[in-house]
Image (cartoon, rainbow, N blue to C red; front, side, top):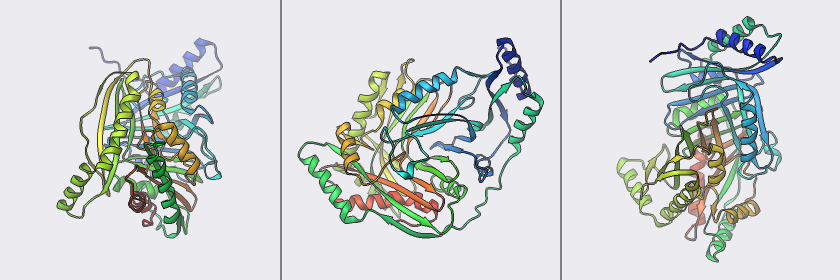
Length: 461
């Protein structure tokens, strides 16, 4: 079989310049890709702090795939009809970008970003975030197992000096950071919805479930934490990578404002038309000894409330994706997914995606799952919007990436925090059914605050 040697960056630039001249156009957007030697993704991300650049970070839950995006080449965003609008804008933009070297999965004009829980975002806290916001970075580091790639997205014009541009792009590969943690975060104060108000909220939800209006609803609370100094995003990332090894780690850093999630929950993964989704609902703490851990896992597997909550998610995901797929495979019973602080009921869903469908079609059908919204979906969403005393923004919503070949992955942004300088707002929720106990659900949210609060430098409240 004939092997074609990949073009160097300089060759790709010259190829693109010739292509532009052949078309008789004055400018051309180009996505350049090269395979490179080892680059540490955490150090690469850390180098660009305090440079007034958007930084994007993604790590999958298997610790085998990383994306680090620096600066914005093109941004597509919308404030309504977020999934459909972003998909249409993406298709229009990709048709204008020339890729002279082809692309491996997760390279080329990859888009990273996120969406809001509801179609519209309200509230001053979320002013820097749109209901749909995807970015093609100027520079992208992709780590796929033991393979490393750099993507450079540029616009060529008639006046572009190819040699000078090549030198500028080449310099990115040598940029790194020592990765050491520089600050000692000191938690100054926290504030959250008190138990009395939380209990009233839960009792109202249970009342709606008992009278048949709702089958289930997921309610959340926020925890506001203030520190004595600005929060160092690099330090938070190192903490999350070191301690949340089984989670997706996502960062959308805009300088003063950043959204961070360390979530165990995949919404959907698309890889060459193979679809993977996960049902993750039902939670209990980890034990302090192996015997206690096994006992707690056994209790979770046999807990009627948690099994019922989990089955809601399984049934909904199957119903949502069936029209978009050729075949679906779902195990008959959940298993335990153990994380550092928590254990969850877990059921994987695999399917073969129809060629006409994309990851955006999937997330529009799936979001929000009963694990984040409730059942019936529209009734639960209305209850949340009318009764939850804060704006969810990007919390509990899809965040992730998609490449030009429709490979991509979206996680659900739970275990998350919205950061502004020295302040952070953390989010945690739990599923409410007829048997729910307000105190038990309150304690569950405290447990779910723990991973992110510890990464920021505080302790659970």
